[in-house]
Length: 281
Ligand code: PMM
Image (cartoon, rainbow, N blue to C red; front, side, top):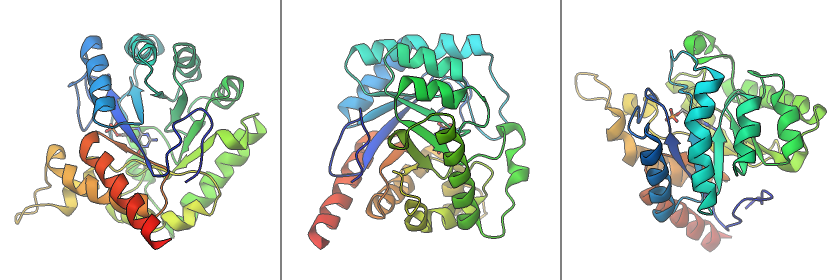
């Protein structure tokens, strides 16, 4: 497995547990909004086997409006400080350079930027200065209108080319190659068909030469796959077993990390995938 400096080094895909400190995230909206609850949830995820805990204060659910900088800082910084103080490897899910800087000061060990440095032009330089790993996700615009940007001739080729351009850009801004982690951004300007193609194309995306993070957990395309006889999508909470299947397959295909809401079963799945791979090596 690829090693990323400053983060747990295991011979298997890592598991990143999600703590959304937001009132409106699409999959666990509002559940962990209170600061104390968010901290307890983070610790619970670690006890269940999370290698990293991803703390976010801005919802990226399709159609979501943005929160103010002040509000985002107030939501995430105390939670990050508390979890980092307990020795947890925390990542901050933010598109804002100011939030990334404050989060790293509070103890965050990774910056997870769903915009891949596109939303805030200061982000790559701030990340370069902190030296922490940086998740550059494939993104074509803010959530309020991302669905209309879901247009591709060949989604794997285009995501790969666009990610390569983002990498060139962030490296030119001073980020070092060993800081970079790539993420194809399932559900971000991608419909269900695009998401499946991207998952099937993990091997090609890995050819870019950077560790890959995959965030499929509870996303709409899983609910659609599992629709009932009337075509009604399965609710988010009913797609955790499907998430688990994606985790096992993604880990086997070489993903460096999976970002999930229910950590325990996914922590088991990455161990199954690692044993399977080892036996076949
Ligand atoms: N998805 C969401 C939020 N942050 N970060 C990365 N790197 N990759 C993702 O796929 C991703 C992300 C949206 O999901 P949520 O609202 O359930 O957190």
